[in-house]
Amino acid sequence: MAKTFKTEKQCHRAVMAYLKTLRPEGRFIKVAQGYYSEAGISDIMGCYKGTPIALELKSATGKPSPKQIRFLKDFMAAGGIADVIRTVEQVKIIIEDIDNERT
Image (cartoon, rainbow, N blue to C red; front, side, top):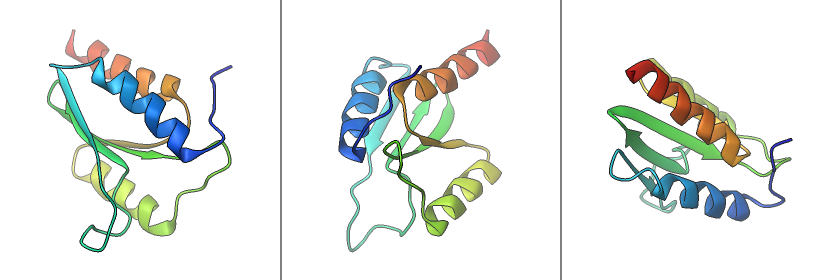
């Protein structure tokens, strides 16, 4: 069974550590949330082999807000991949799917 995290911060650390291993084919940033950021924007945004990706990270029990769900749906409608992430394994599946499409 995939490891879920008690806190969103733990999830962020583990997911970002994995995403950094994908350079140079992939580049991801943690989006700083604050006064000037858009409400609902995903926690991590990036691109892997030309595919835009938005990841909303949550703890094992965390739930996305309606604005976060709307952002994910809009991002997918624009042609990107977007999902709520609770485990590193979920991110690995997304990356493997992109790799399989490109081979």
